[in-house]
Length: 390
Image 1 (cartoon, rainbow, N blue to C red):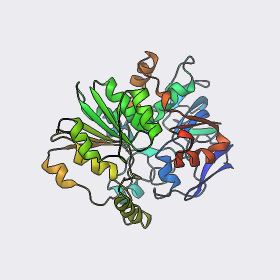
Image 2 (cartoon, helix red, strand yellow):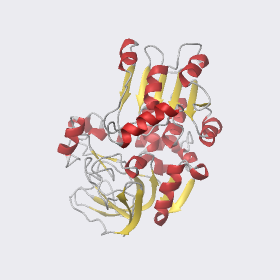
Image 3 (cartoon, helix red, strand yellow):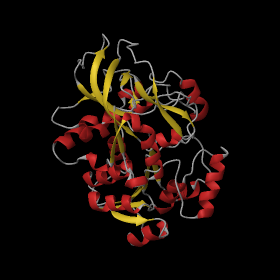
Image 4 (cartoon, rainbow, N blue to C red):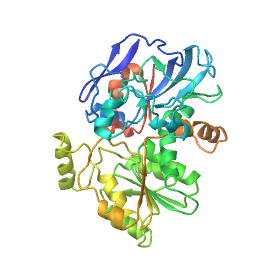
Protein backbone atom coordinates (compact mmCIF):
# COMPACT_ATOMS: atom_id res chain seq x y z
CA UNK A 1 0.00 0.00 0.00
CA UNK A 2 0.97 3.66 -0.28
CA UNK A 3 1.85 5.62 2.86
CA UNK A 4 3.37 8.97 3.75
CA UNK A 5 6.67 8.25 5.50
CA UNK A 6 9.12 10.42 7.40
CA UNK A 7 12.49 10.64 5.65
CA UNK A 8 14.37 12.92 8.01
CA UNK A 9 14.13 16.53 9.06
CA UNK A 10 11.88 18.57 6.71
CA UNK A 11 11.28 15.59 4.41
CA UNK A 12 8.43 13.14 3.81
CA UNK A 13 7.76 10.85 0.85
CA UNK A 14 5.14 8.42 -0.41
CA UNK A 15 6.43 4.86 -0.17
CA UNK A 16 5.12 1.38 -0.89
CA UNK A 17 4.88 -0.44 2.45
CA UNK A 18 3.32 -3.74 3.59
CA UNK A 19 -0.38 -3.64 4.39
CA UNK A 20 -1.19 -3.92 8.11
CA UNK A 21 -2.54 -7.15 9.53
CA UNK A 22 -4.41 -8.23 12.65
CA UNK A 23 -1.86 -8.76 15.44
CA UNK A 24 -4.15 -8.92 18.48
CA UNK A 25 -7.68 -10.19 19.05
CA UNK A 26 -8.83 -6.61 19.78
CA UNK A 27 -7.45 -5.15 16.53
CA UNK A 28 -9.30 -3.89 13.48
CA UNK A 29 -8.05 -2.97 10.02
CA UNK A 30 -9.48 0.22 8.52
CA UNK A 31 -9.39 1.20 4.86
CA UNK A 32 -8.77 4.92 5.11
CA UNK A 33 -11.10 7.22 3.19
CA UNK A 34 -9.91 10.55 4.63
CA UNK A 35 -6.89 11.59 6.68
CA UNK A 36 -5.46 14.98 7.60
CA UNK A 37 -2.24 16.82 8.31
CA UNK A 38 -2.21 18.21 11.86
CA UNK A 39 -0.22 21.17 13.13
CA UNK A 40 1.53 18.82 15.54
CA UNK A 41 2.68 16.74 12.53
CA UNK A 42 4.88 19.71 11.68
CA UNK A 43 6.80 19.17 14.93
CA UNK A 44 7.67 15.71 13.61
CA UNK A 45 8.38 17.09 10.15
CA UNK A 46 10.82 19.64 11.58
CA UNK A 47 12.59 17.02 13.68
CA UNK A 48 11.65 18.33 17.12
CA UNK A 49 10.02 15.13 18.40
CA UNK A 50 12.61 12.50 19.44
CA UNK A 51 12.58 8.80 18.46
CA UNK A 52 11.08 9.24 14.98
CA UNK A 53 12.77 6.90 12.50
CA UNK A 54 13.18 7.06 8.75
CA UNK A 55 10.28 5.23 7.13
CA UNK A 56 7.80 5.79 9.98
CA UNK A 57 4.25 6.31 8.68
CA UNK A 58 2.88 9.66 9.87
CA UNK A 59 -0.65 10.80 10.62
CA UNK A 60 -3.00 10.57 13.58
CA UNK A 61 -6.22 12.02 12.16
CA UNK A 62 -8.05 9.49 10.03
CA UNK A 63 -11.31 7.69 9.34
CA UNK A 64 -12.52 5.02 7.00
CA UNK A 65 -14.23 1.66 6.52
CA UNK A 66 -13.65 -1.40 8.69
CA UNK A 67 -12.39 -4.26 6.50
CA UNK A 68 -11.34 -6.78 9.16
CA UNK A 69 -11.87 -7.23 12.90
CA UNK A 70 -10.20 -9.41 15.53
CA UNK A 71 -12.27 -12.06 17.33
CA UNK A 72 -12.70 -9.95 20.48
CA UNK A 73 -14.03 -6.86 18.67
CA UNK A 74 -17.80 -7.12 19.01
CA UNK A 75 -18.84 -3.48 18.61
CA UNK A 76 -17.67 -3.16 14.99
CA UNK A 77 -18.53 -5.06 11.84
CA UNK A 78 -16.88 -5.22 8.44
CA UNK A 79 -18.30 -2.35 6.40
CA UNK A 80 -18.81 0.03 9.35
CA UNK A 81 -17.76 3.62 8.75
CA UNK A 82 -15.61 4.83 11.65
CA UNK A 83 -13.62 7.78 12.95
CA UNK A 84 -10.50 6.75 14.90
CA UNK A 85 -9.34 8.80 17.93
CA UNK A 86 -5.64 9.67 17.86
CA UNK A 87 -4.82 8.37 21.39
CA UNK A 88 -4.83 4.59 21.68
CA UNK A 89 -6.64 3.43 24.82
CA UNK A 90 -7.44 0.04 26.35
CA UNK A 91 -10.60 1.18 28.13
CA UNK A 92 -9.96 -0.82 31.30
CA UNK A 93 -6.92 0.64 33.12
CA UNK A 94 -7.26 3.19 35.93
CA UNK A 95 -6.62 6.12 33.58
CA UNK A 96 -9.20 4.98 31.01
CA UNK A 97 -11.75 4.26 33.73
CA UNK A 98 -11.27 7.87 34.87
CA UNK A 99 -11.84 9.17 31.34
CA UNK A 100 -8.16 10.06 30.89
CA UNK A 101 -7.80 8.07 27.69
CA UNK A 102 -4.61 9.72 26.41
CA UNK A 103 -2.91 8.52 29.61
CA UNK A 104 -3.79 4.85 29.02
CA UNK A 105 -1.47 2.62 31.05
CA UNK A 106 -1.51 -0.27 28.57
CA UNK A 107 -1.21 1.22 25.07
CA UNK A 108 2.42 2.35 24.97
CA UNK A 109 4.76 -0.64 24.57
CA UNK A 110 7.72 1.75 24.75
CA UNK A 111 6.74 3.35 28.05
CA UNK A 112 10.30 3.12 29.32
CA UNK A 113 11.50 5.55 26.66
CA UNK A 114 8.83 8.09 27.54
CA UNK A 115 9.57 7.78 31.25
CA UNK A 116 13.16 8.92 30.71
CA UNK A 117 11.96 12.23 29.25
CA UNK A 118 8.58 12.75 30.88
CA UNK A 119 8.84 11.00 34.25
CA UNK A 120 5.81 8.79 33.54
CA UNK A 121 4.52 7.57 30.21
CA UNK A 122 1.33 8.72 28.51
CA UNK A 123 -0.57 6.36 26.22
CA UNK A 124 0.29 5.45 22.67
CA UNK A 125 -0.48 7.71 19.71
CA UNK A 126 -0.80 6.83 16.04
CA UNK A 127 2.12 7.95 13.90
CA UNK A 128 3.83 9.99 16.60
CA UNK A 129 7.27 8.57 17.41
CA UNK A 130 8.55 5.38 19.02
CA UNK A 131 8.54 7.10 22.40
CA UNK A 132 4.74 7.08 22.11
CA UNK A 133 4.39 3.52 20.92
CA UNK A 134 5.90 3.35 17.45
CA UNK A 135 2.46 2.81 15.90
CA UNK A 136 2.05 3.27 12.16
CA UNK A 137 0.00 6.37 11.39
CA UNK A 138 -3.03 7.03 9.24
CA UNK A 139 -1.60 8.90 6.26
CA UNK A 140 -1.88 5.68 4.33
CA UNK A 141 -4.35 3.49 2.50
CA UNK A 142 -4.92 1.18 5.48
CA UNK A 143 -4.25 1.29 9.21
CA UNK A 144 -4.20 -1.22 12.04
CA UNK A 145 -6.28 0.03 14.98
CA UNK A 146 -5.43 -1.56 18.37
CA UNK A 147 -8.15 -1.73 21.05
CA UNK A 148 -10.72 -1.24 18.30
CA UNK A 149 -13.46 -2.18 20.76
CA UNK A 150 -12.73 1.06 22.65
CA UNK A 151 -11.56 3.79 20.26
CA UNK A 152 -13.36 4.02 16.91
CA UNK A 153 -16.80 5.55 16.75
CA UNK A 154 -19.26 4.59 14.01
CA UNK A 155 -20.67 7.50 12.04
CA UNK A 156 -23.87 7.67 9.98
CA UNK A 157 -23.73 7.57 6.21
CA UNK A 158 -25.64 10.85 5.85
CA UNK A 159 -22.70 12.84 7.25
CA UNK A 160 -19.84 13.36 4.76
CA UNK A 161 -16.27 12.58 5.80
CA UNK A 162 -15.30 16.22 6.23
CA UNK A 163 -18.01 16.86 8.82
CA UNK A 164 -16.81 14.04 11.07
CA UNK A 165 -13.12 13.49 10.25
CA UNK A 166 -12.02 16.16 12.71
CA UNK A 167 -13.58 14.17 15.57
CA UNK A 168 -10.32 12.21 15.41
CA UNK A 169 -8.36 15.07 17.00
CA UNK A 170 -8.69 18.78 16.38
CA UNK A 171 -12.37 19.24 17.25
CA UNK A 172 -12.20 17.32 20.57
CA UNK A 173 -8.84 18.96 21.31
CA UNK A 174 -10.28 22.44 20.78
CA UNK A 175 -13.37 21.55 22.80
CA UNK A 176 -11.31 20.16 25.67
CA UNK A 177 -9.20 23.31 25.62
CA UNK A 178 -12.33 25.38 26.12
CA UNK A 179 -13.73 22.98 28.72
CA UNK A 180 -10.52 23.24 30.75
CA UNK A 181 -11.24 26.97 31.09
CA UNK A 182 -14.14 26.21 33.42
CA UNK A 183 -16.61 28.30 31.44
CA UNK A 184 -19.91 28.82 33.24
CA UNK A 185 -21.25 31.73 31.17
CA UNK A 186 -20.22 35.29 30.43
CA UNK A 187 -16.43 34.83 30.38
CA UNK A 188 -13.82 36.51 28.20
CA UNK A 189 -11.55 33.89 26.63
CA UNK A 190 -8.34 34.68 24.73
CA UNK A 191 -6.95 32.08 22.33
CA UNK A 192 -3.37 32.09 21.04
CA UNK A 193 -3.28 30.52 17.58
CA UNK A 194 -5.98 30.71 14.90
CA UNK A 195 -5.12 27.45 13.21
CA UNK A 196 -7.58 24.58 13.11
CA UNK A 197 -7.33 23.71 16.82
CA UNK A 198 -7.45 27.35 17.89
CA UNK A 199 -10.46 28.11 15.70
CA UNK A 200 -12.35 25.11 17.08
CA UNK A 201 -11.36 26.08 20.63
CA UNK A 202 -12.85 29.52 19.98
CA UNK A 203 -16.05 28.05 18.57
CA UNK A 204 -16.24 25.63 21.49
CA UNK A 205 -15.81 28.46 23.99
CA UNK A 206 -18.92 30.09 22.55
CA UNK A 207 -20.78 26.74 22.61
CA UNK A 208 -19.97 26.49 26.34
CA UNK A 209 -21.21 30.00 27.11
CA UNK A 210 -18.33 32.44 26.75
CA UNK A 211 -19.44 36.03 26.12
CA UNK A 212 -16.33 37.19 24.24
CA UNK A 213 -13.52 35.35 22.48
CA UNK A 214 -10.32 37.06 21.38
CA UNK A 215 -8.21 35.46 18.63
CA UNK A 216 -4.45 36.11 18.66
CA UNK A 217 -2.41 35.37 15.54
CA UNK A 218 -0.28 37.13 12.92
CA UNK A 219 -1.73 35.85 9.64
CA UNK A 220 -4.54 38.06 8.30
CA UNK A 221 -6.38 35.16 6.62
CA UNK A 222 -6.51 33.20 9.89
CA UNK A 223 -7.69 36.22 11.85
CA UNK A 224 -10.30 36.80 9.16
CA UNK A 225 -11.56 33.23 9.61
CA UNK A 226 -11.73 33.78 13.36
CA UNK A 227 -13.80 36.91 12.89
CA UNK A 228 -16.07 35.79 10.06
CA UNK A 229 -16.62 32.10 10.86
CA UNK A 230 -16.36 32.13 14.65
CA UNK A 231 -17.26 35.65 15.73
CA UNK A 232 -14.00 36.21 17.63
CA UNK A 233 -12.31 39.57 18.06
CA UNK A 234 -9.00 39.47 16.11
CA UNK A 235 -5.70 40.65 17.56
CA UNK A 236 -2.57 40.68 15.39
CA UNK A 237 0.41 40.27 17.69
CA UNK A 238 2.80 41.72 15.11
CA UNK A 239 0.91 45.01 15.26
CA UNK A 240 0.39 45.42 19.00
CA UNK A 241 1.66 44.47 22.44
CA UNK A 242 -0.62 41.55 23.29
CA UNK A 243 -0.48 41.86 27.09
CA UNK A 244 -1.28 45.59 26.95
CA UNK A 245 -3.97 45.13 24.31
CA UNK A 246 -5.75 42.42 26.31
CA UNK A 247 -5.61 44.57 29.41
CA UNK A 248 -7.21 47.44 27.48
CA UNK A 249 -9.88 45.16 25.97
CA UNK A 250 -10.89 43.85 29.39
CA UNK A 251 -10.96 47.04 31.44
CA UNK A 252 -7.53 46.38 32.94
CA UNK A 253 -8.52 42.98 34.32
CA UNK A 254 -7.27 40.50 31.74
CA UNK A 255 -9.13 37.58 30.14
CA UNK A 256 -10.84 35.13 32.49
CA UNK A 257 -9.04 32.28 30.77
CA UNK A 258 -6.35 31.95 28.12
CA UNK A 259 -5.88 29.04 25.72
CA UNK A 260 -2.49 28.20 24.22
CA UNK A 261 -3.28 26.46 20.92
CA UNK A 262 0.22 27.08 19.51
CA UNK A 263 2.71 24.82 21.26
CA UNK A 264 6.41 24.28 20.84
CA UNK A 265 7.07 26.19 17.63
CA UNK A 266 5.67 29.56 18.59
CA UNK A 267 6.70 32.78 16.85
CA UNK A 268 7.28 36.14 18.54
CA UNK A 269 6.99 39.62 17.08
CA UNK A 270 10.28 40.59 18.72
CA UNK A 271 13.09 39.50 16.40
CA UNK A 272 15.47 39.28 19.35
CA UNK A 273 13.25 37.05 21.51
CA UNK A 274 12.31 34.92 18.52
CA UNK A 275 15.95 34.45 17.55
CA UNK A 276 16.88 33.58 21.15
CA UNK A 277 14.44 30.68 21.36
CA UNK A 278 15.01 29.52 17.76
CA UNK A 279 18.76 29.34 18.39
CA UNK A 280 18.40 27.42 21.65
CA UNK A 281 15.87 25.07 20.05
CA UNK A 282 18.01 24.47 16.97
CA UNK A 283 20.98 23.30 19.08
CA UNK A 284 18.64 21.40 21.44
CA UNK A 285 19.39 23.51 24.50
CA UNK A 286 15.62 23.71 24.85
CA UNK A 287 12.92 21.82 22.99
CA UNK A 288 10.24 24.52 22.90
CA UNK A 289 9.65 28.07 21.66
CA UNK A 290 7.05 28.92 24.31
CA UNK A 291 6.18 32.51 23.32
CA UNK A 292 2.41 31.88 23.36
CA UNK A 293 2.44 30.20 26.76
CA UNK A 294 4.52 32.96 28.33
CA UNK A 295 2.12 35.61 27.01
CA UNK A 296 -0.95 33.62 28.06
CA UNK A 297 0.29 33.43 31.65
CA UNK A 298 1.27 37.10 31.77
CA UNK A 299 -2.06 38.17 30.23
CA UNK A 300 -4.49 36.07 32.25
CA UNK A 301 -6.43 37.79 35.02
CA UNK A 302 -5.57 37.16 38.65
CA UNK A 303 -7.08 33.86 39.70
CA UNK A 304 -7.80 32.90 36.09
CA UNK A 305 -7.03 29.76 34.12
CA UNK A 306 -4.49 29.00 31.42
CA UNK A 307 -5.43 26.03 29.25
CA UNK A 308 -2.61 24.45 27.24
CA UNK A 309 -3.58 22.29 24.26
CA UNK A 310 -0.70 23.20 21.95
CA UNK A 311 1.78 20.31 21.78
CA UNK A 312 4.97 20.49 23.85
CA UNK A 313 7.66 17.86 23.97
CA UNK A 314 10.25 18.53 26.64
CA UNK A 315 11.80 21.56 28.30
CA UNK A 316 11.48 25.33 27.92
CA UNK A 317 13.44 28.37 29.02
CA UNK A 318 12.27 31.45 30.93
CA UNK A 319 8.98 30.00 32.15
CA UNK A 320 7.15 32.70 34.18
CA UNK A 321 6.59 30.62 37.28
CA UNK A 322 6.55 33.74 39.47
CA UNK A 323 3.54 35.14 37.67
CA UNK A 324 1.77 31.78 37.74
CA UNK A 325 2.30 31.26 41.46
CA UNK A 326 1.90 34.77 42.84
CA UNK A 327 -1.30 35.50 40.94
CA UNK A 328 -3.09 32.23 41.76
CA UNK A 329 -3.36 31.17 38.13
CA UNK A 330 -4.55 27.64 37.43
CA UNK A 331 -2.67 25.78 34.69
CA UNK A 332 -4.61 22.96 33.02
CA UNK A 333 -3.40 20.87 30.13
CA UNK A 334 -3.19 17.48 28.47
CA UNK A 335 -3.26 15.55 25.25
CA UNK A 336 -6.93 15.32 24.42
CA UNK A 337 -8.90 12.41 25.87
CA UNK A 338 -10.70 12.09 22.54
CA UNK A 339 -12.82 9.05 23.42
CA UNK A 340 -14.46 11.13 26.16
CA UNK A 341 -15.83 13.62 23.63
CA UNK A 342 -16.58 11.86 20.34
CA UNK A 343 -20.23 10.98 20.91
CA UNK A 344 -20.97 14.30 22.60
CA UNK A 345 -19.50 16.23 19.69
CA UNK A 346 -21.00 13.96 17.04
CA UNK A 347 -24.40 14.78 18.55
CA UNK A 348 -23.62 18.51 18.32
CA UNK A 349 -22.71 18.07 14.65
CA UNK A 350 -25.90 16.12 13.96
CA UNK A 351 -28.02 18.79 15.66
CA UNK A 352 -26.46 21.44 13.43
CA UNK A 353 -24.82 23.32 16.31
CA UNK A 354 -21.45 23.23 14.57
CA UNK A 355 -19.85 22.07 11.33
CA UNK A 356 -16.13 21.74 12.10
CA UNK A 357 -15.24 21.39 8.42
CA UNK A 358 -15.07 25.18 8.12
CA UNK A 359 -11.39 24.93 9.10
CA UNK A 360 -10.54 22.73 6.09
CA UNK A 361 -8.92 24.74 3.31
CA UNK A 362 -7.31 22.14 1.02
CA UNK A 363 -8.12 18.67 -0.28
CA UNK A 364 -5.30 16.66 -1.88
CA UNK A 365 -4.58 13.10 -2.93
CA UNK A 366 -2.53 11.01 -0.51
CA UNK A 367 0.21 11.02 -3.16
CA UNK A 368 0.43 14.79 -2.74
CA UNK A 369 1.16 14.64 1.00
CA UNK A 370 4.67 16.12 0.59
CA UNK A 371 3.13 19.09 -1.24
CA UNK A 372 0.54 19.41 1.53
CA UNK A 373 3.19 19.43 4.25
CA UNK A 374 5.14 22.16 2.52
CA UNK A 375 2.01 24.23 1.85
CA UNK A 376 0.88 23.88 5.46
CA UNK A 377 4.33 24.66 6.81
CA UNK A 378 4.74 27.80 4.69
CA UNK A 379 1.11 28.94 5.18
CA UNK A 380 0.76 29.10 1.39
CA UNK A 381 -2.55 29.75 -0.35
CA UNK A 382 -4.27 30.62 2.96
CA UNK A 383 -3.76 27.06 4.20
CA UNK A 384 -5.41 26.16 7.52
CA UNK A 385 -6.09 22.42 7.23
CA UNK A 386 -5.16 19.83 4.60
CA UNK A 387 -7.25 16.70 4.07
CA UNK A 388 -5.67 13.83 2.13
CA UNK A 389 -7.73 11.30 0.16
CA UNK A 390 -6.10 7.87 -0.35
